[in-house]
Length: 266
Image 1 (cartoon, one colour):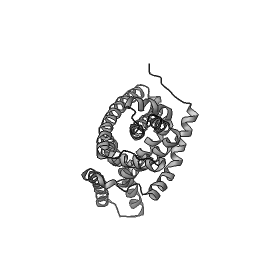
Image 2 (tube, one colour):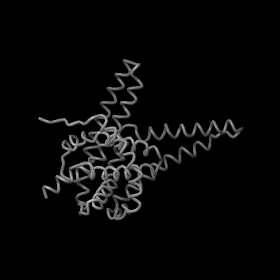
Image 3 (cartoon, helix red, strand yellow):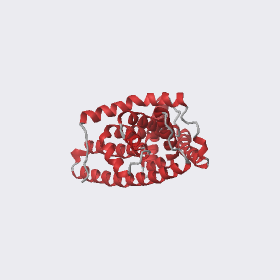
Image 4 (cartoon, helix red, strand yellow):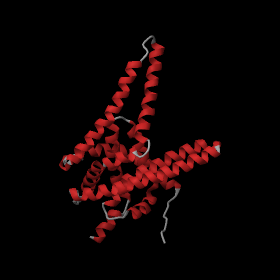
C-alpha cells in the first residue's frame, strides 16, 4: 500500500518562502563557485543548448522588429500607446510560444544537460564528495527527464482541461480556476527540477513523486520561478533552470534525506 505523506499548509507556505529567499543566495553561490565550469565537456550536447537560446532570441527580436515597423510617432500619446502595445504583445506572444502545448517541457528536456551539470556540481561542492557526472550518467538522466516531462505534460493537459470544463460550467469559479491552473503548471514544472536531485540517489520516479509530497511548497515555488523566468527572452530560459536547480539542490541538501540514505547504503 502506498502511503501518501503530506505536511501542513503552514509548512508548505514556509517552504515556498524559503525558496524565494534562496534564489538570490543561489545566484551568489553560482557566481562565486563558477558552477558553469566543465559544462562544455559534453561537446555537441552543450552547443545544442546555445542553439535553443538563439532560436528563442530570434523569436523575440522578430517581435521587436515588427513593433518598430508599426510604431506610431505622431505624438507622445501615440508613442506611449505603441510602447504599451509592444509589452502586451511580448507577454502574449512569449507566453504562447513558450507555454503552448508541450513546448515548455520540450525546452526543459533540452536543458537537461545544464540541469544535470549544475545539480551535480552544486552537490559536490556542498557535500565534499564526488558525484557521477560522466556522459553515461547524463544519458541515463536524460532518458529519465524525457519520461518525467512527458508524464508532466500529459497530466497537466488533462487536469487543466478538467479545470476549464468546471469553470466553463460554473462561471463564478473562473478566478479560482485560473489560480488552480497556475498551481498545476507550477507543480509539474517544479517537479522536473526536484526530480533531478532524487534521481542522483537512486530513487525511482514513483519514489520521487512520493518524496516530493513532503516538499510541495518547494516544488510549487521552483515551478513558479521557472514560469516567470521563461517569459524573459533568451536569458530567462537559461538563468531560470540554472538558479532553480542550484536553489533546489541547496535546499534539499539541507532539508532532504535522500543523500543521507544514499550515504548509509554506501
